[in-house]
Each structure stands twice: as structure tokens, then as C-alpha cells.
Image 1 (cartoon, rainbow, N blue to C red):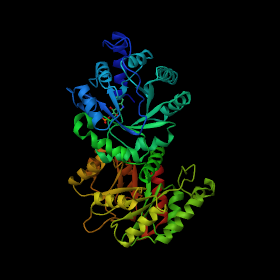
Image 2: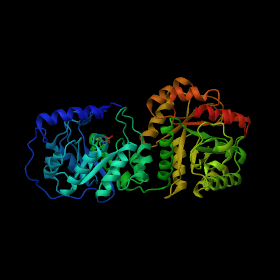
Image 3: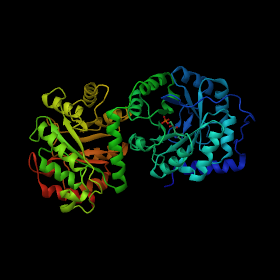
Length: 516
Ligand SMILES: O=P(O)(O)OC[C@@H](O)[C@@H](O)c1c[nH]c2ccccc12
């Protein structure tokens, strides 16, 4: 797909042809300072960023040296300097200025390098690390450029995002030390999706950096929980340098935990579904083994159990048994699962991966809420879906219960009016990768059988990736997928014969519609 990256690369080739590797800047012939090792310890990398194609002007008049000094006093040891001139209003002059003024900071040259001799220019300008974007460099050139960086003592920082980038990264890391960054920004749409770095995290063979989109301490914390060694913060730091210290702290005070594990797992499965061009499928309101096993066999990615007053309330002992059955079966070959033999689904799953088990909770301080938290801490449930009135307070309570281990979780926002969209944006800003949307029916927490008004779903879909619940059934699921491309669909009452019991024929036709 042609996107801004293609355009930047094209213009940069023209400029290089016209101006040479220094792009018109008077770069010193000799490097002025020794190498300062880049990202030796876990930490934040703050960026000198004047403008960007997605945001326009950010801080066009910034003074690079005083900004770098203020970043240092915010607790950063590493600074990224954007040197691209046309789209980011950066310059090699900025890098030369900050690297000669700040001797204890380590500097990354951030640009769209395309030629080997640009590495030499980065070295002479004082860089300690150099960004190499896997997508715009073919494998042999990327390897050569990485080797050239290392020959100067600089660290190659390789940016990956797509599956095709990973093979290049793998080859470069076999040849020597590299640092990998995953950009959470989609350069075609400029949407930020923290689930992209989450999905790739465990496939990176080296130390790692979460890139882009983090603007609050909680969002920075999330990146660390995923297990990233560094986070790259641009706009949020350059625009409000006085807030940079709290962003740095948000990252360095956190630890990798089960919240991160949960989202890496969701991310991995979500990416696989994306390749199949289908949403993740969550079947909710399960109460018995028969229904749960069928849902798993038909291809459900998540199974939901209600821990709240409801005709679909789950018995914790049964949930334990179901979890044990599913775990045992996930070790069998696919052909031995009932669904793979009798399933109406045209594309049965290749491996019998165990679905993620989710406890749906409305009141964390009720007996049922406590049961769900206990099952999550025991590893029986993979995560909690907070379906109560105040999503933020709910997430905080789960944090508290999870202690330093953390409990996988996400929130539900019940969408009744445009005002509710703001809450979704707030949660996203704080690094929540996904929020599940459900219909708002006064007096009822969920399983209402009611759909969210289409107009509101449209608005929510335009603002970011959708996880969608509310009134889904075999008759409307296909049109919902076609119209809104949700990344997860959640159905409960629309698949029942009576409350608490699934209708197996309805379930089969539901999956047939999804996998079509
Ligand atoms: O301003 P943000 O959203 O915090 O993003 C910073 C940085 O990750 C972003 O500038 C970036 C990521 N990859 C890039 C490649 C080139 C130029 C810039 C970038």
C-alpha cells in the first residue's frame, strides 16, 4: 500500500541525489566525542521532534540543546533526534548541536536512511545509535548498514512492524548486537495501536523499544508491562517538556507482568485472525462444559463466564473443570477434537489452541467478583472483563487485587450516547489497547440482547479499533463484520435456547457466518 513512508522515501532519494549524504549541512569531518552506549539500562528515549506528517507542527521553534538538557533532568539517558528535513522539520544540525553540548547523553539519529554512507555521516554528527527502518531497506542493504554502524561502535536500531520485517531483523541480530523497535503507529492511517508491539514482543530476538503514541504515564507503564526495555516518546515530551519526567517514571517504575502477558497473547491471536480476515470471536455467558467445549471446537478465541447476578451466572467449580478439560485437549492433535470432525465450519483451526477464559464481573467487591479475581490469580481465568458502571474504578480495583503480578483485564463501555465516546478515548490515551463496547440498557449490566445504535458504532469505529458486543446473532453478525470490521465480536444471549443454555444449531450457524 502506498503511504506516507513511500512518499518520504521518494523525496529523500531525490534530495540525496541533489545534495549528497549530508543534505546540505556542514557536517564535521571528524567526530567530536566518544561513543556513549545507547540504552544500556531500561529507560525512556525522549525525542527532539519539531513536526510530523501526522500531527503537523509540534514544537517548530524548539531549542534542541535546552530541550535535550531538560530531557536529561527528566531522567532520560537517551535522546532521539529527528534529522529528516521535509516532513519532520529536523536537521543534522540539531544532532551536531546536542551531541557536542551534552556529553553524558546518548543519541539516536532518527531518519529514513537509505544509503550506506549516511551511516558515516551519522557517526561524524555524534550519533551513538542509528535508526534503520526494515520496511524501506532490502535485507542485504540492511545487513550492510547494521554492520557499518557496529564498525563505528554505534548501535543499529532496527524498526519493525510487519511480519516481513522480522526475517530481516533476525538476520541482522545473528550478525551482531541490534536493538529492535516496534512502531505502534500505522503509517497509512496514523492510527496508534499498542496491540501491534504487544503481538510482536515475543518474536523479537534482542532488546526492544516500544515506539510512538504514548502520551500519559499509564500508557508508558503499559509498554513496560509488555516487557519492552525502552519506550520512544516524541510529541508528548517535545510539546510539554515539563511533563516528561512523569512519562519517564511511568515507564521505569513498572515491571513486566501478567497484564502485559495477557495483551501479548491477545495481540498474537488478533494478528493471526487479521491474516484470516476475521475478528476474534468471544462466546459469552457460558455455564456448562458441553456448550464451552463446542464453542472452543467451533473456533472461539475467548470464552466468557459471568460472575454477576444473572441467569447465566457461572459456578466457579465448573469453570475450573472446563479450564482443565480445555487445557488437556489443547495438547491433542486437532483431528481429535469433536468440532474438527463434525464442525460445519469450512476452515477449522489448524492447531487446537486453547481459548482464553474470561471472567465477566460487574462488582469486584461482591462474592462473585471475588471468586473471579481468585480464579484469575490462580491462572484458571486468563483475564477479567469489567462490565460494571465505572470502568476506570473497576480497572483500578483489579490492579489493586493483582498486586505486583497483575491480572489480565479490559473494560466494557456501554455506549448510549456520543458522550460515552469520550470515555473510550480517555481509556485509549491511558494505554488500554482495547475496550469492549456494549449497548446501554438502563438497569441491566449486559446480556441484554440489544444492539448499540449503528450511528454510535460508526463513530466509535472511525476513532479506533472496535471490540463489539450487544445483540449479535447468526442473522446479523455477517452484516456487522462487513460494515464495521470489528477486531472482536462478543455474543451471548443471541445464541441461546433458554437463558444459560446455548442452542448448538445457532452456535454452528453463527460460526458459519463468521468464517464464510
Ligand atoms: O511522537 P510519538 O507518537 O511519541 O512518536 C515518537 C516516535 O516513535 C516517532 O517519531 C517515530 C517512530 N518511528 C519513526 C520513524 C521515523 C520518524 C519518526 C518515527
